[in-house]
Length: 217
Image (cartoon, rainbow, N blue to C red):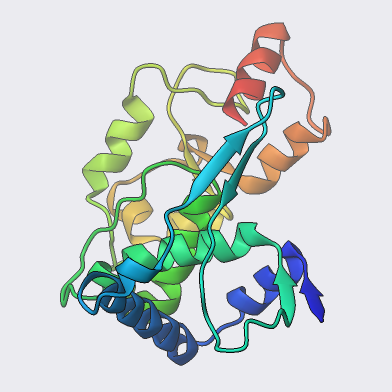
């Protein structure tokens, strides 16, 4: 018998090629069809759950697969469930011929899994602004961000919106949105600056900046 923990499962799933992920999606589609149309629903037990006094909730989902019923392996369920749930959403997503914008609500692990699958299945269609004449966002949006009420600049401690970039100077010269919106260097914060703040390698101006920055990151 083999046992795969969540890390091992994640490494397998994250390294699937587009063709392999597409085959997985087709299998999910076939499962939907078998369950809803071909009568397989009649032979699958409903899931049940129990909750302990501590609040721990355990879900039981019995199912049938091969004819022998012999147990050949055990998988930790977190990554498998997350991948399968995200792949369910990919079924109708791949029906769309033209996709211009994608909105993912939330920022948890499920959002990450959705993003990974979107990039795997449709990533070749993504358009990046890596030249000054290319844009993905209306430059007015960036102006709105830096002028928005309630914004915060963790470097200066000012209540102004900022744009997070990996390289400020490169963005000012090569990012279409930054060039065409005429953003200034002080309107941007680099990722390494945030990391330096998190590791206390950059000094804070006052206690309020510490509190606001902890909220920001």
